[in-house]
Amino acid sequence: MLWSANSLSNLSDGLAFVSMPLLAASMTDDPRMIAGLAVMYSIVRLTVVLPIGVWVDRVDRRSLLVAANLLRGAALLAFAFTIQFGFASLLMLYVVMALVGVFESLADNAAVAILPSLVRRERLDKANGRIAAVQLIADEFVGPPLGGFLFALAAAAPMLAMGSLWGLAGLFALALPRRTADAGPRPPRRSVYAEARDGVRWLVRHRIVGSLALIGALASVGYMLPFSILVLVAEQNLGLDGGGYGVLLAFSALGGLLGSFIAPRLRDAVGYRWTIVASLALGAMTLAGLAFTSDAVVAGILLALYILHAVVWNICAASLRQRLVPDNLLGRVGAAGRVCGLLGLAVGAALGGLLATVNVSLAVAAGAAVFAACTLVAVFALRRGIEFSAD
Image 1 (spheres, rainbow, N blue to C red):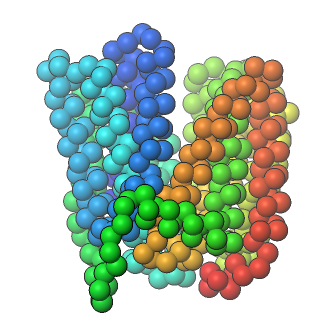
Image 2 (cartoon, rainbow, N blue to C red; image 1 turned 120 degrees about the vertical axis):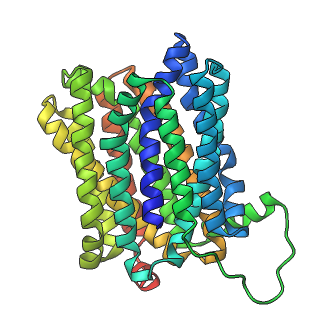
Protein backbone atom coordinates (compact mmCIF):
# COMPACT_ATOMS: atom_id res chain seq x y z
CA MET A 1 0.00 0.00 0.00
CA LEU A 2 2.85 2.37 0.78
CA TRP A 3 4.52 1.53 -2.54
CA SER A 4 1.22 2.18 -4.37
CA ALA A 5 0.68 5.50 -2.59
CA ASN A 6 4.25 6.55 -3.42
CA SER A 7 3.78 5.50 -7.05
CA LEU A 8 0.70 7.69 -7.49
CA SER A 9 2.33 10.57 -5.64
CA ASN A 10 5.53 10.38 -7.72
CA LEU A 11 3.55 10.31 -10.95
CA SER A 12 1.85 13.52 -9.85
CA ASP A 13 5.28 15.00 -9.03
CA GLY A 14 6.41 14.15 -12.57
CA LEU A 15 3.39 15.94 -14.01
CA ALA A 16 4.13 18.99 -11.85
CA PHE A 17 7.76 19.15 -13.01
CA VAL A 18 6.63 20.09 -16.52
CA SER A 19 3.13 21.51 -16.16
CA MET A 20 3.76 24.08 -13.42
CA PRO A 21 6.51 25.97 -15.31
CA LEU A 22 4.40 25.77 -18.49
CA LEU A 23 1.45 27.27 -16.66
CA ALA A 24 3.64 30.05 -15.22
CA ALA A 25 4.98 30.81 -18.71
CA SER A 26 1.42 31.08 -20.01
CA MET A 27 0.66 33.72 -17.35
CA THR A 28 3.79 35.90 -17.64
CA ASP A 29 6.71 36.60 -19.97
CA ASP A 30 8.94 37.70 -17.08
CA PRO A 31 11.65 35.02 -16.64
CA ARG A 32 12.22 36.18 -13.07
CA MET A 33 8.65 35.33 -12.13
CA ILE A 34 8.87 31.94 -13.83
CA ALA A 35 12.18 31.05 -12.16
CA GLY A 36 10.87 32.50 -8.90
CA LEU A 37 8.35 29.66 -8.71
CA ALA A 38 11.16 27.13 -8.18
CA VAL A 39 13.01 29.47 -5.80
CA MET A 40 9.90 29.98 -3.67
CA TYR A 41 9.21 26.24 -3.64
CA SER A 42 12.74 25.53 -2.37
CA ILE A 43 12.54 28.23 0.31
CA VAL A 44 9.20 26.92 1.56
CA ARG A 45 10.52 23.37 1.87
CA LEU A 46 13.63 24.55 3.72
CA THR A 47 11.50 26.64 6.11
CA VAL A 48 9.08 23.89 7.10
CA VAL A 49 11.33 20.82 7.12
CA LEU A 50 12.33 20.95 10.82
CA PRO A 51 8.82 21.60 12.23
CA ILE A 52 7.47 18.84 10.00
CA GLY A 53 10.05 16.44 11.43
CA VAL A 54 8.70 17.15 14.91
CA TRP A 55 5.09 16.47 13.89
CA VAL A 56 6.09 13.25 12.15
CA ASP A 57 7.42 12.04 15.52
CA ARG A 58 4.46 13.41 17.49
CA VAL A 59 1.49 12.27 15.39
CA ASP A 60 0.43 8.98 13.80
CA ARG A 61 2.42 8.82 10.57
CA ARG A 62 -0.30 7.13 8.56
CA SER A 63 -2.69 9.99 9.39
CA LEU A 64 -0.10 12.54 8.29
CA LEU A 65 0.52 10.68 5.03
CA VAL A 66 -3.21 10.51 4.30
CA ALA A 67 -3.79 14.17 5.18
CA ALA A 68 -0.79 15.45 3.20
CA ASN A 69 -1.90 13.69 0.01
CA LEU A 70 -5.58 14.53 0.35
CA LEU A 71 -4.91 18.20 1.11
CA ARG A 72 -2.53 18.80 -1.77
CA GLY A 73 -4.91 16.89 -4.03
CA ALA A 74 -7.77 19.15 -2.94
CA ALA A 75 -5.62 22.25 -3.50
CA LEU A 76 -4.79 21.19 -7.07
CA LEU A 77 -8.39 20.27 -7.91
CA ALA A 78 -9.62 23.64 -6.64
CA PHE A 79 -6.90 25.40 -8.63
CA ALA A 80 -7.85 23.45 -11.75
CA PHE A 81 -11.38 24.83 -11.54
CA THR A 82 -10.10 28.41 -11.22
CA ILE A 83 -8.07 27.84 -14.41
CA GLN A 84 -11.02 26.32 -16.22
CA PHE A 85 -13.32 29.23 -15.35
CA GLY A 86 -10.75 31.96 -15.92
CA PHE A 87 -10.08 33.07 -12.33
CA ALA A 88 -6.52 31.81 -12.01
CA SER A 89 -3.62 34.20 -11.50
CA LEU A 90 0.13 34.02 -11.03
CA LEU A 91 -0.31 34.82 -7.33
CA MET A 92 -2.68 31.88 -6.95
CA LEU A 93 -0.13 29.63 -8.69
CA TYR A 94 2.54 30.74 -6.20
CA VAL A 95 0.20 30.05 -3.26
CA VAL A 96 -0.69 26.60 -4.61
CA MET A 97 2.97 25.72 -5.16
CA ALA A 98 3.77 26.84 -1.60
CA LEU A 99 1.05 24.52 -0.27
CA VAL A 100 2.31 21.68 -2.44
CA GLY A 101 5.82 22.25 -1.08
CA VAL A 102 4.60 22.04 2.54
CA PHE A 103 2.51 18.93 1.98
CA GLU A 104 5.20 17.25 -0.12
CA SER A 105 7.72 17.72 2.69
CA LEU A 106 5.20 16.25 5.13
CA ALA A 107 4.39 13.27 2.91
CA ASP A 108 8.04 12.52 2.11
CA ASN A 109 9.13 12.57 5.76
CA ALA A 110 6.17 10.50 6.94
CA ALA A 111 6.67 7.90 4.19
CA VAL A 112 10.35 7.40 5.06
CA ALA A 113 9.63 7.26 8.81
CA ILE A 114 6.78 4.76 8.50
CA LEU A 115 8.66 2.24 6.35
CA PRO A 116 10.63 0.53 9.18
CA SER A 117 7.33 -0.32 10.90
CA LEU A 118 6.08 -2.08 7.75
CA VAL A 119 9.19 -3.99 6.59
CA ARG A 120 11.66 -6.24 8.40
CA ARG A 121 15.07 -4.64 8.92
CA GLU A 122 16.85 -7.02 6.53
CA ARG A 123 14.42 -6.09 3.74
CA LEU A 124 14.70 -2.30 4.02
CA ASP A 125 17.22 -2.16 1.16
CA LYS A 126 14.84 -3.97 -1.19
CA ALA A 127 11.89 -1.85 -0.10
CA ASN A 128 13.80 1.39 -0.62
CA GLY A 129 15.04 0.07 -3.97
CA ARG A 130 11.50 -0.62 -5.18
CA ILE A 131 10.36 2.82 -4.07
CA ALA A 132 13.34 4.40 -5.87
CA ALA A 133 12.56 2.43 -9.06
CA VAL A 134 8.97 3.60 -9.31
CA GLN A 135 10.04 7.15 -8.45
CA LEU A 136 12.45 7.17 -11.40
CA ILE A 137 9.86 5.72 -13.78
CA ALA A 138 7.19 8.19 -12.71
CA ASP A 139 9.42 11.28 -12.40
CA GLU A 140 11.65 10.76 -15.44
CA PHE A 141 9.84 8.61 -18.02
CA VAL A 142 6.06 8.87 -17.57
CA GLY A 143 5.28 12.08 -15.70
CA PRO A 144 7.07 14.78 -17.76
CA PRO A 145 5.83 13.75 -21.25
CA LEU A 146 2.34 13.07 -19.89
CA GLY A 147 2.33 16.48 -18.21
CA GLY A 148 3.27 18.19 -21.48
CA PHE A 149 0.62 16.24 -23.39
CA LEU A 150 -2.12 17.09 -20.90
CA PHE A 151 -1.13 20.77 -20.86
CA ALA A 152 -1.39 20.82 -24.66
CA LEU A 153 -4.98 19.56 -24.32
CA ALA A 154 -5.97 22.14 -21.70
CA ALA A 155 -4.15 24.13 -19.03
CA ALA A 156 -6.42 22.70 -16.35
CA ALA A 157 -5.96 19.06 -17.43
CA PRO A 158 -2.62 18.34 -15.68
CA MET A 159 -3.92 20.08 -12.52
CA LEU A 160 -6.96 17.81 -12.50
CA ALA A 161 -4.75 14.77 -13.04
CA MET A 162 -2.33 15.80 -10.28
CA GLY A 163 -5.12 16.48 -7.79
CA SER A 164 -6.76 13.14 -8.56
CA LEU A 165 -3.49 11.20 -8.25
CA TRP A 166 -2.62 12.78 -4.90
CA GLY A 167 -6.16 12.12 -3.69
CA LEU A 168 -5.85 8.45 -4.67
CA ALA A 169 -2.48 8.27 -2.93
CA GLY A 170 -4.16 9.48 0.25
CA LEU A 171 -6.85 6.81 -0.06
CA PHE A 172 -4.24 4.08 -0.55
CA ALA A 173 -2.42 5.32 2.55
CA LEU A 174 -5.60 4.71 4.56
CA ALA A 175 -4.85 0.98 4.32
CA LEU A 176 -1.60 1.39 6.29
CA PRO A 177 -1.61 0.48 10.00
CA ARG A 178 -1.78 3.14 12.65
CA ARG A 179 1.11 3.51 15.09
CA THR A 180 0.25 1.90 18.41
CA ALA A 181 0.46 4.19 21.40
CA ASP A 182 3.41 3.66 23.75
CA ALA A 183 2.57 2.39 27.20
CA GLY A 184 3.32 4.52 30.22
CA PRO A 185 3.12 8.24 30.91
CA ARG A 186 3.91 10.63 28.11
CA PRO A 187 6.70 13.17 28.62
CA PRO A 188 5.57 16.80 28.74
CA ARG A 189 5.32 18.33 25.28
CA ARG A 190 7.80 21.10 24.57
CA SER A 191 7.97 23.69 21.81
CA VAL A 192 8.37 22.54 18.22
CA TYR A 193 11.86 23.97 17.88
CA ALA A 194 12.98 22.56 21.23
CA GLU A 195 11.99 19.10 20.02
CA ALA A 196 13.58 19.78 16.62
CA ARG A 197 16.87 20.50 18.41
CA ASP A 198 16.74 16.99 19.89
CA GLY A 199 16.90 15.57 16.37
CA VAL A 200 19.78 17.86 15.42
CA ARG A 201 21.73 16.96 18.57
CA TRP A 202 21.18 13.23 18.03
CA LEU A 203 22.37 13.57 14.42
CA VAL A 204 25.51 15.48 15.41
CA ARG A 205 26.44 13.02 18.17
CA HIS A 206 25.90 9.81 16.20
CA ARG A 207 29.08 9.03 14.27
CA ILE A 208 27.54 7.00 11.45
CA VAL A 209 24.29 8.89 10.88
CA GLY A 210 26.04 12.24 11.34
CA SER A 211 28.66 11.19 8.80
CA LEU A 212 25.92 10.22 6.36
CA ALA A 213 24.39 13.70 6.76
CA LEU A 214 27.78 15.34 6.11
CA ILE A 215 28.33 13.18 3.03
CA GLY A 216 24.78 13.95 1.88
CA ALA A 217 25.38 17.69 2.18
CA LEU A 218 28.65 17.49 0.24
CA ALA A 219 27.05 15.20 -2.36
CA SER A 220 24.25 17.74 -2.83
CA VAL A 221 26.86 20.41 -3.57
CA GLY A 222 28.63 18.06 -5.96
CA TYR A 223 25.35 17.18 -7.69
CA MET A 224 24.20 20.75 -8.28
CA LEU A 225 27.58 22.03 -9.48
CA PRO A 226 27.15 20.29 -12.86
CA PHE A 227 23.40 19.73 -12.96
CA SER A 228 22.48 23.37 -12.40
CA ILE A 229 24.18 24.16 -15.74
CA LEU A 230 23.87 20.75 -17.44
CA VAL A 231 21.82 22.26 -20.26
CA LEU A 232 24.82 24.49 -21.07
CA VAL A 233 27.14 21.48 -21.02
CA ALA A 234 24.83 19.77 -23.50
CA GLU A 235 24.78 22.80 -25.79
CA GLN A 236 28.39 23.97 -25.62
CA ASN A 237 30.35 20.74 -25.10
CA LEU A 238 28.10 18.14 -26.72
CA GLY A 239 26.38 20.21 -29.44
CA LEU A 240 22.87 19.06 -28.48
CA ASP A 241 19.64 20.97 -29.06
CA GLY A 242 16.60 20.86 -26.76
CA GLY A 243 15.40 17.54 -28.11
CA GLY A 244 18.83 15.96 -27.74
CA TYR A 245 19.06 17.26 -24.17
CA GLY A 246 15.75 15.59 -23.33
CA VAL A 247 16.95 12.28 -24.79
CA LEU A 248 20.19 12.60 -22.81
CA LEU A 249 18.27 13.02 -19.54
CA ALA A 250 15.86 10.17 -20.33
CA PHE A 251 18.76 7.83 -21.14
CA SER A 252 20.61 8.78 -17.96
CA ALA A 253 17.57 7.80 -15.88
CA LEU A 254 18.02 4.20 -17.07
CA GLY A 255 21.15 4.03 -14.94
CA GLY A 256 19.14 4.98 -11.88
CA LEU A 257 16.60 2.29 -12.65
CA LEU A 258 19.41 -0.28 -12.79
CA GLY A 259 20.84 1.08 -9.55
CA SER A 260 17.53 0.59 -7.73
CA PHE A 261 17.70 -3.15 -8.48
CA ILE A 262 21.40 -3.80 -7.84
CA ALA A 263 21.78 -1.76 -4.62
CA PRO A 264 20.41 -4.51 -2.31
CA ARG A 265 22.60 -7.12 -4.03
CA LEU A 266 25.70 -4.97 -3.72
CA ARG A 267 24.99 -4.39 -0.05
CA ASP A 268 24.57 -8.13 0.51
CA ALA A 269 27.85 -8.82 -1.31
CA VAL A 270 30.21 -6.20 0.15
CA GLY A 271 28.31 -4.48 2.96
CA TYR A 272 27.16 -0.91 3.45
CA ARG A 273 30.58 0.68 3.83
CA TRP A 274 32.12 -0.45 0.57
CA THR A 275 28.88 -0.10 -1.38
CA ILE A 276 28.71 3.55 -0.32
CA VAL A 277 32.42 4.14 -0.97
CA ALA A 278 32.25 2.52 -4.42
CA SER A 279 29.12 4.45 -5.39
CA LEU A 280 30.62 7.80 -4.40
CA ALA A 281 33.88 6.97 -6.23
CA LEU A 282 31.79 6.15 -9.31
CA GLY A 283 30.12 9.56 -9.01
CA ALA A 284 33.52 11.27 -8.94
CA MET A 285 34.84 9.30 -11.94
CA THR A 286 31.76 9.84 -14.11
CA LEU A 287 31.74 13.60 -13.54
CA ALA A 288 35.48 13.77 -14.24
CA GLY A 289 34.87 12.01 -17.55
CA LEU A 290 31.92 14.26 -18.35
CA ALA A 291 34.08 17.35 -17.82
CA PHE A 292 36.41 16.32 -20.65
CA THR A 293 34.18 14.58 -23.19
CA SER A 294 32.58 16.15 -26.25
CA ASP A 295 30.90 12.94 -27.42
CA ALA A 296 27.17 12.83 -26.69
CA VAL A 297 27.05 9.02 -26.55
CA VAL A 298 29.92 8.86 -24.07
CA ALA A 299 28.28 11.64 -22.05
CA GLY A 300 25.00 9.70 -21.96
CA ILE A 301 26.75 6.58 -20.64
CA LEU A 302 28.62 8.63 -18.03
CA LEU A 303 25.42 10.33 -16.89
CA ALA A 304 23.63 6.98 -16.67
CA LEU A 305 26.45 5.67 -14.45
CA TYR A 306 26.28 8.86 -12.40
CA ILE A 307 22.54 8.44 -11.76
CA LEU A 308 23.20 4.77 -10.92
CA HIS A 309 25.66 5.89 -8.24
CA ALA A 310 23.21 8.44 -6.85
CA VAL A 311 20.41 5.88 -6.48
CA VAL A 312 22.67 3.26 -4.86
CA TRP A 313 24.03 5.86 -2.41
CA ASN A 314 20.56 7.15 -1.53
CA ILE A 315 19.15 3.65 -0.95
CA CYS A 316 22.03 2.66 1.34
CA ALA A 317 21.95 5.94 3.27
CA ALA A 318 18.15 5.80 3.74
CA SER A 319 18.23 2.16 4.88
CA LEU A 320 21.02 2.84 7.36
CA ARG A 321 19.18 5.81 8.88
CA GLN A 322 16.00 3.75 9.16
CA ARG A 323 17.93 0.99 10.94
CA LEU A 324 20.00 3.14 13.28
CA VAL A 325 17.71 6.02 14.28
CA PRO A 326 15.23 5.31 17.12
CA ASP A 327 11.64 5.24 15.93
CA ASN A 328 10.62 8.20 18.09
CA LEU A 329 13.33 10.34 16.43
CA LEU A 330 13.03 9.24 12.79
CA GLY A 331 11.11 12.33 11.72
CA ARG A 332 13.35 14.85 13.45
CA VAL A 333 16.67 13.25 12.51
CA GLY A 334 15.46 12.84 8.93
CA ALA A 335 14.44 16.50 8.86
CA ALA A 336 17.86 17.62 10.14
CA GLY A 337 19.51 15.58 7.39
CA ARG A 338 17.21 17.12 4.78
CA VAL A 339 18.22 20.62 5.90
CA CYS A 340 21.84 19.69 5.20
CA GLY A 341 20.89 18.37 1.77
CA LEU A 342 18.74 21.38 0.83
CA LEU A 343 21.48 23.81 1.86
CA GLY A 344 23.97 21.79 -0.16
CA LEU A 345 21.74 22.02 -3.23
CA ALA A 346 21.52 25.81 -2.89
CA VAL A 347 25.29 26.19 -2.44
CA GLY A 348 26.02 23.86 -5.36
CA ALA A 349 23.66 25.69 -7.70
CA ALA A 350 25.20 29.06 -6.82
CA LEU A 351 28.77 27.78 -7.27
CA GLY A 352 27.85 26.01 -10.50
CA GLY A 353 26.53 29.24 -11.97
CA LEU A 354 29.62 31.17 -10.92
CA LEU A 355 32.10 28.62 -12.26
CA ALA A 356 30.16 28.27 -15.52
CA THR A 357 30.80 31.96 -16.24
CA VAL A 358 34.45 30.94 -16.58
CA ASN A 359 33.92 27.55 -18.25
CA VAL A 360 31.07 25.04 -18.02
CA SER A 361 33.55 22.15 -17.81
CA LEU A 362 35.06 23.76 -14.71
CA ALA A 363 31.76 23.39 -12.86
CA VAL A 364 31.56 19.70 -13.81
CA ALA A 365 35.17 19.10 -12.76
CA ALA A 366 34.48 20.82 -9.43
CA GLY A 367 31.58 18.43 -8.90
CA ALA A 368 33.96 15.51 -9.49
CA ALA A 369 36.35 16.94 -6.89
CA VAL A 370 33.55 17.24 -4.33
CA PHE A 371 32.54 13.61 -4.87
CA ALA A 372 36.18 12.55 -4.46
CA ALA A 373 36.09 14.31 -1.09
CA CYS A 374 32.84 12.48 -0.25
CA THR A 375 34.56 9.19 -1.03
CA LEU A 376 37.41 9.96 1.37
CA VAL A 377 34.98 10.98 4.12
CA ALA A 378 33.09 7.71 3.66
CA VAL A 379 36.30 5.61 3.77
CA PHE A 380 37.38 7.06 7.13
CA ALA A 381 34.08 8.01 8.80
CA LEU A 382 32.39 4.66 8.16
CA ARG A 383 35.34 2.50 9.21
CA ARG A 384 33.95 0.87 12.34
CA GLY A 385 30.58 -0.33 13.52
CA ILE A 386 28.57 0.25 10.36
CA GLU A 387 27.82 -3.37 9.50
CA PHE A 388 27.49 -4.50 13.13
CA SER A 389 25.17 -1.58 13.96
CA ALA A 390 23.12 -2.09 10.82
CA ASP A 391 22.69 -5.85 11.06
